[in-house]
Each structure stands twice: as structure tokens, then as C-alpha cells.
Amino acid sequence: MLMGLAGEVSVSRDRLDSIERLLENKQLLTRSEIESYEPTSTVTAERAAWRETFLDEVLRIVQVELEAAETDDTQPYEEAIAAVENNSQLEKED
Image (cartoon, rainbow, N blue to C red; front, side, top):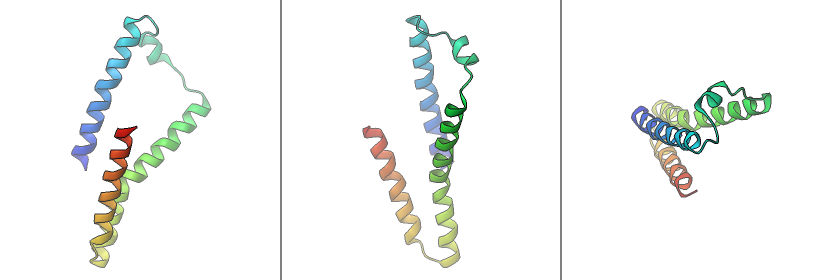
């Protein structure tokens, strides 16, 4: 799970770097403008909500695994893995 997240962060970082460079090359935005950006309270709230949903999704597998260990039932864990994999595939298609 950790390596999967690390891979996703790495890819996201590369893409963000590309976007920043393209914006700067086209003189639409400078990196210093990005660094000095101060989000509004609405943006901050939207980001917090996204983070909460994201972390719930990531940690859902851990929670299901703990519950399965307590009951010796591995079926919910396997279903959670499949759900996360399906969600990842849907996001890639968008």
C-alpha cells in the first residue's frame, strides 16, 4: 500500500512539475506566484474535504483488514481491495 501511494505521489509530482513549467514557459503564471498563492477559506475547506475522502479510501483497506483479522473472515478484505482497484481504474478512464 505504501509503495503504491509513493508511486502515485511520484507521478503526480512529475505531472505538477510539467504543468508549472508549461505555465511559466507560456508566461501565464510564474512559480513564485504559485508559491505565494493563498487559498481562500472555500478552497481550504474543499481541499480538507478531498483529503478526508482520500485518507478514508486509503485507510479503508487497513480497517477492513483489521476487522477481518478479528473475525477470521478474509472476504471483506478481498472485496475492499477489488473496490479500490475498480475505483483506480475509473479515475484513470476520466
